[in-house]
Length: 133
Image (cartoon, rainbow, N blue to C red; front, side):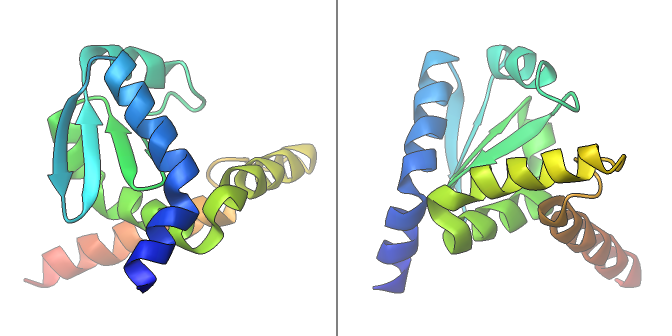
């Protein structure tokens, strides 16, 4: 039941991600219950987003510049999937408000954004885990 509820909570953005993947002629794959989509058109669109993004998460959909980018950013983007599960349709407004607030204070709205810090920390933990093996 929880799985259904978190999917519904994040569904507005998941639908947007699927729509973008379709109109940008993406290649679709389901990896660990998340739809991953990539294409050259997605790569061009992402590059226009600050800070020249290579991947973006929308609900349970991750749009990436390429298949290799999707593999490389999987840990980071899965944190954002979990954030969408917690915040649902409130995530994007909260993320953007944090960005604006930080920018107005002279800070980096991306790197110092609490949503990104959580994802970067997961990246670091994943790298440390791989080094220990």
